[in-house]
Length: 301
Image (tube, rainbow, N blue to C red; front, top):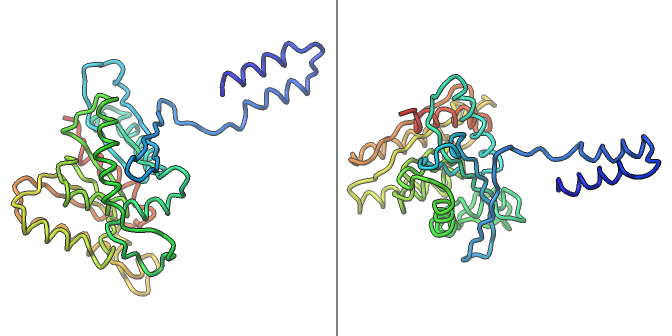
């Protein structure tokens, strides 16, 4: 795109008798272009099993090129269309006055190409087909296991082969349905990631399916090797008559019950912490939630 633009500008400059308005019109083509995040990459990684293609957004640490022997923790964030630029910005901001969090490779997990975000995430992030009654019937749910298989067999090998990652320090970060996906991975293949950041997890889904999944896991396992950090907004509780709060699902109570249930297992390899962030709701909590998560999971060593 840049080569074509420069050629057009040069041709306009060399035209005999080129008038001011023509030159100005040509130069204006350099204005109004889409904003791009500097020093980021986009890779397409197909899913052989489903035939769908997804994009990975990549941001490498500032020291990546200068230290070719160093390997980095790698964070995978679901709902990358909003999560990727936000986490990238927060992580750089936190370190402006000196190292506060460790550098890491950031991988954004975007939606299926050609689909809108809601269609893609409803299908790929939910564990069962028992969708909420309010959702249109033509929306597919319950294929999180297929997407998880794609992550394991296609995405993680692609990233580990192409970039200097530390596979022992993989981090999953998801908000809402993204956190529901992370919870499902936690109880089906816990060592796929080392750290799980579960923001405002939609534990209400399918009559609290994930709490039942945790019970099934506990019956057959003596350990859960994972580091979990959860956050939720205080307004994600239910307070009848107060419009600032949820009308139906008490996500604060669900998260508290989930944490209590996990701690009661006394898994030797599990560490877990959570935060209820005041004055935040489901739509406003993820920037401060992401910030707390980075500070919790990646403090400078």
